[in-house]
Image (tube, rainbow over all chains, first blue to last red):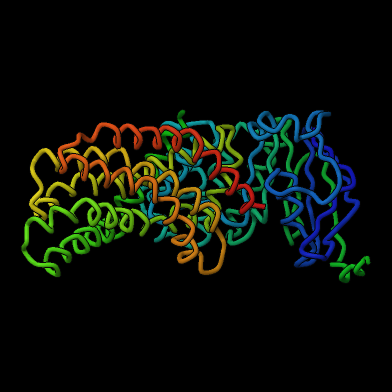
Length: 213
Length: 221
């Protein structure tokens, strides 16, 4: 279970959001919404442990994340805005490297199967630079198919995907949730997923804070 | 360990697909070294005298050419984020990147140096000492360079800043590396200098990945 109390985030001397509470239990999903610049990506980066929160506490299985960092990261899959795809490597090499870095090396057969399932059949050995934006996204999403992580944090997973891929991603997410996984994602579109879900709306960006003398 | 090998393999693959970057540094090294005999003239005594310094300074500059790309590409495409979220310690993954950098930017210099040393009328034994000194010294350049590359990550005009930051830190390696060849030319034996270079390497292997990792974490926030 992931729980956060009173999270706040500063960008320069502007407070992006404050007093954000959230709780995600196994089988539950949380959609983070908000206008551009409301701090959705910042919130996800804080939850993933990539950036420090200005205030607040994040707990994983009842213990502060700072104390159980390694265990937390071993159970976490984070896909950020940048898809972490190397243009000069093939889809297969990209997927295998990403999996090995995440601590779960894949043999070639499993990786190929995942790429085929995600709709990249016949393109496994092409360098990523000749793939389209949506296809690059699919290479990144293929990691979901091979992941054993409990908690998925996905930043705009539906961007650049066609209708069929959106449907397929939804079914992948449903599978994850039905296995007792947890999911936090941002998206501007309404998404219907299985299991219990909630949405968190980050407020409009506040005006610059008064300078305190 | 799997993740470490995956990073080394990935960076070597990337280097193999972008051969121009590796060859640019190598040709730079070759041309800079070759300019000196052409500019100074064929006096073998003078050439022998300046050979260690010229070869070492050229190696420093050539090793630095590819440094600013060491972490920049990973930072840009999000790979660095994934590396910092890996269950494998980031310092180990950074060591993998440094090893790959040395294999593509340092080792070729070591192999090429004896050929270039012939232009300076160095004896076979001095060429051997030159190779050993570069073999011990170029990994130090990659390790120290990684700290600089991590510190200047995301800084505008980072390339020039990186040189200003890293070149002074290369001075010990330069002194002992060139000193080893000079000592050998003077018939004094290069053992002392090479031992000191080895000590620098041991220190670098131990501490540089941690320092670079700390700098990367700051850049990621």
